[in-house]
Amino acid sequence: MLLEFRAKNYRSFKDEFVFSMIPAAKQKDLSYSVLKKNAGGREYKALCSSVVYGPNAAGKSNIISAMDTLKKILQRGNVLNPDESSVTRINPPSVYLDLIPFISGDENNPTSFFIKFITEDMLIEYSFTVALGKFASLDYERDILEESLCVNGLQVFLRGKSDGANTLALSFDGFKGKEQYLNDKVVENFDSLCAISLSSLNKTELFLTSGFKTIVANKFVEAFLTWINKKFIVVYQADAIQFGKKMPNSEQDHAYIDDRIDKAAKIFGISSNSIGFVYPDGKRPVLSSVFKNGEDMVTIPARLFESYGTVRFINEFPLVIAAILSGGTLVVDEFDASLHPMALMNIINIFHNDEINRNNAQLIFNTHNPIFLDKNLYRRDEIKFVERDEETGASSLYSLSDFKTYGTEGRNNADYMKNYFLDRYGAIKDIDFSQAFIEWMNQAEEKKAQNG
Image 1 (spheres, rainbow, N blue to C red):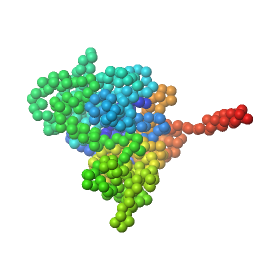
Image 2: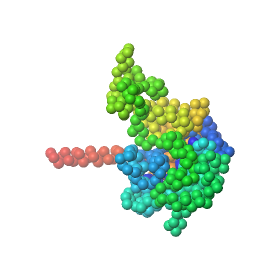
Image 3: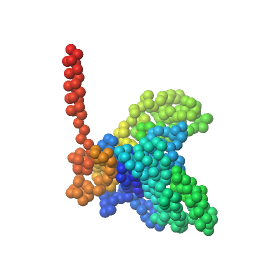
Image 4: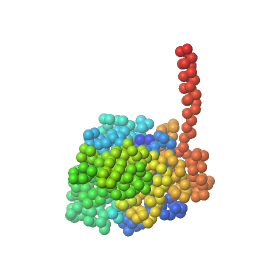
């Protein structure tokens, strides 16, 4: 369960932004949207959903990009650009880390990430700060300046720099009652392990996934990365998703129909009898419309027969299933694009339904659709806004609940959609192409007159 994510000096965000899934104080509307989970003997609360608004190029996607970048860095275990042949370029900053720093900056400010989540009855807070140089500094010598891990509110390790030399403070206090996550005999060999851990530090490698994992707590890091890899489901550019299962050779000669996906597709609405997958090259599945005529089966690539919205829904819906069943946090860039609002409304309500969402799943997405600005659908603290300063180029993130002290605009009885279009919350831009078209028409007519 995600509680908080932060990043600083990332793309359009110069200052630190805080994406909080912690309920705002004293807010009581839509209590069913609040999840509860125990960690370290305490109960923690989190929002089950959040929607982000803002004009184009304001920085909405950069929040999701930052989450994806943190995930990719943790998976690699270092702050180096990976081998291009082994990665996709759906989110370039996650691959080319030189594209991370604040775009409009002219100083070598470090970039930092922080994530706070609960897994296996542990409250985990992890952060690191890395020097990457200015935006697009290809040859800058990278260096991890700080790295920190806290478990159940207690510091486990703190990595830093002093006079250019590495420093490391190591403690096992956070693992009280959780000793099974520590490697054998680490407690009695504490002093020697501290010395070995310090000597293992590499300026471009995360200590968490290298020395700490090998020397101190392999099982803990496995649990940490299991949540990151399987339950922190971050999708940047949702239209690039292509769902499909790898099938054994014996089943690749005919269409494979996933019962759950097929059932969801029929509820959503399809033109064929069923939806399935065929494997023309024996490897990559092709989403296909399946037509049955008695014993005969005909398959046609779905992109040639179904609507774009239907194909996109079928590719995205397995992520919803995975999040609900596992209690994962699903973060999607423009999840609602090409989807009917009623379908997305129902998906949102599933995350809000305590009887269905028993595993504390969460849904986060950005959108331009004002239909979700509804006090009966979202709490004020679930609605976020991103605005970008035209002079500095810097983005800022804030919540509708931040307006609680300013008149009635953010109160429960306010019309959120109306107030948004009246520019009472910011994060909206007046767009008018009229003058540009007048100029182009005049230019075209002048050119036509000159040519006779």
